[in-house]
Length: 185
Image 1 (cartoon, rainbow, N blue to C red):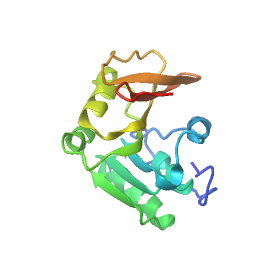
Image 2: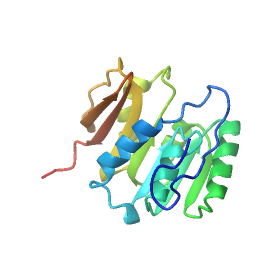
Image 3: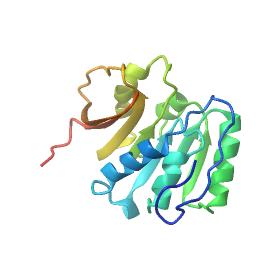
Image 4: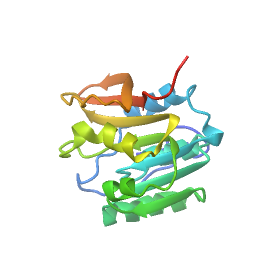
């Protein structure tokens, strides 16, 4: 797994050897960032990487110029690799929070322009995840929540957010959510 663009392009990222972490494939990651390219002002963007694993998505955002990234991961082994990956790129504009995502969402530390969530596919509350994240207030008013999920999943309707874009990559789907409260041109 590598950083695919930006100042850290080509940098190899380490991850746990078992299947406890499922990093985004280069194809999916590249497509997600191509979609965000003209929608996000990277030099001013603050990024939250939930279920961060190796930190691949947040590190890609930093490589493309994101101002700051916060990584939330509860696996101690994954956090070790995440910290090694951040040290390898000498990232100082980031924070690693070794905690359960829902504990973090109960007491978030600010708002973010881009929130990535790549939870385990068998996650119990996956259908409610967009509402839970928007309810926590971590997504800025004009921000994006991007969730990678299996194709058979259907998210609950929410008065807080709506799917703004859905992309399919084989059996993997990426849904981009935005606030329903923001008036858009």
